[in-house]
Amino acid sequence: MKKVQKAHITKLEDYLWEIPKSFREDMRVPAQILASEGLLDAIIKDRSLNQLVNVATLPGIKKASMVMPDVHEGYGFPIGGVAAMDYPEGVISPGGIGYDINCGVQLLASQLQIKDNRDAVEALSKELHAHVPAGMGKGGTIKLTTEQLDEVLAEGANWAVNHGYGTRESLSYMESHGKLNDADPAFVSTMAKNRGLDQLGTIGSGNHFVEVDFVEKTYNNTIAKTYGLQKGQIVLLIHTGSRGLGHQVATDHIRKMMMAMSHYGINVPDRELTCVPFNSKEGQEYFKAMCAAANFAWCNRQIISWEVKNAWENIFGKEGGDLRLLYDVAHNIAKIEMHTIEGTSRKVIVHRKGATRAFGPGFKELPPEYKGVGQPVIIPGSMGTCSYVLAGTSKSHEMTFGSCCHGAGRRLSRSAAKRQANAPVLKEKLREQGIFVEAGSFRGIAEEAPIAYKDVGSVVDVVSASGIAKKVAKLKPVAVIKG
DNA sequence: ATGTCC
Image (tube, rainbow, N blue to C red; front, side, top):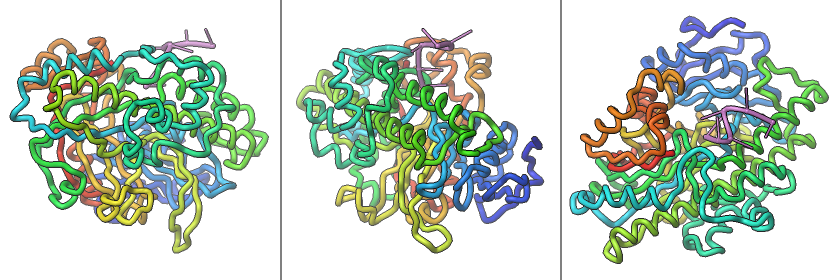
């Protein structure tokens, strides 16, 4: 199939590019790219735009197949992709959500200033490392019974607060209040459940982390104040998902869908785009299992959050004050939402894969104090660089189905990063810059080296300049705990 | 991302 080149792309407006439907006969909608010219030149080098075009062929896709500026190649769909399908006849595709179902980020705000607490950072990073198991296949201290696991899958973060891990108020500060009601544990296989039994409270490996940051600067004082952020304040970021359980849910249902797809007369240009109609038996079973895995992830982040608070208290005691949940967002998920398409409000199945929901002011689900300014959008950068807090806008509803970027985005594959990065040297360099790295392996550090990622600042500048989110604060890391 | 190939 022909590769997408610069000549195939037209500029619609500043930061918005389009590959027209005429590019390939099988496209049902155009493909759109949110990027600066510089980022586009980098994006065009890999296969992610061809993947974007492939997504535009899927049955029921509305308006456009879209990618955010942090786009890179993924399984079938590009990571950084957003695709909305007609409800309920359009398809649902596991590749549009990703293997790590409800991978996401939670941001905790402290009452301490970095300037008064520099000396405590090293001890804090060691304490966090001791409280939060990290690494491939690593289990935690909580061993669930199968009955308890079914409760977690049905209740999400509610299970955590019902069992003493955190407070009930925190649920209001989570996307979907930490629970998708369509979850059904019956469609999560025994193998998937077995993998999850001891994984609550663990971050896993790869780009997952617990990070200590401070607010380096604020861009919008009104919104920063509303979110409770101020310059110099210490905050903590938790980035993880549904671990082996979610991975197994994806594996199981992808296998079933591959066998069922032809039965529905669906042909896709890449087998990794396997999909079935949302309202089919296989579509419903996957959706209910995906919701259950998403609930597991929310419960996981909530329990990690509780462990982070324990570590915090051990270091700072009573003077450490509260760690308040600022917000928790998913960036690998499919949601049923209402969106206005060609002037008509309609229900769609929004696939977000490496894309964060970014709903604007007035959104009902938001806690009252955030309602006037929009949903917090949390953008973690790569290891040792910066992260950002943004606020969703009404423009995101018009342009991107209420979505925004989710991070810096890879520019090197894991294997290329391992070849190019020198992990021990990098760890020492970060240390010299005042960033403590607690990692299970040098391999993990090499794969996550900053050179393996795009510049998060340029990615954030695109979403901000295009108006789909407003910059609120920039966070600078002082300690990172990784798998 | 992932008991990195049941």
